Image 1 (cartoon, rainbow, N blue to C red):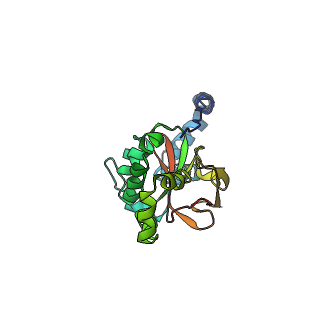
Image 2 (image 1 turned 60 degrees about the vertical axis):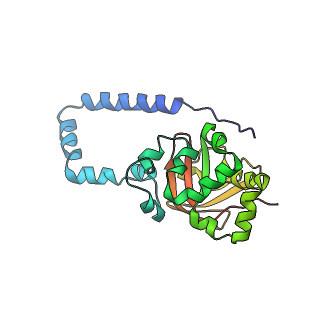
Image 3 (image 1 turned 90 degrees about the vertical axis):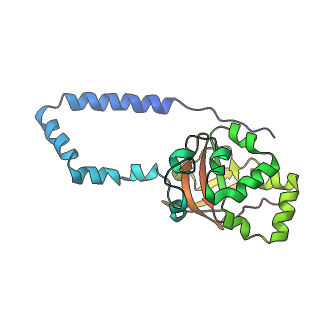
Length: 215
């Protein structure tokens, strides 16, 4: 399977650095008014407000199932961010069945070497919704398993703001996401339980249903 890898875009980082430099320059030259503003901003009330700002929330994982993710170690959000996506998933207790399926399909290296992708990752409970005979048959059929698993991967790294809409999958068929804020669904049925989870090469949305491409 060949995956079209996306090139990173350093311009956003450069613009952000330039904007920060201009802001710092303006602050350093604004005299006593700036000193007063700085004192106000450093107050506990201001710091509390900054901690829950929309920008801060948008950068964090969200969803009820996020509470089940370990607080520290390789399976934590911080630990997962250091590893490529298949390795990161292997350390997450919610995704052990998915990891078994990925290994069975021989997709570990494919997913780990991809760049800037989005993975819709079914939980163990999502796989458990499938009749056991159907799940066993899927795991035993490498071609079909590969088709199903690659349908859960988009070649675009999607932030929550970019998630609503139609997106291509590596399988070939499109995925459609809907919702806003912290409430999203995929293909009108799969609910995002824990979203915006970052790994070294992917953004992960943990979902409650196995997505099935058209036959």
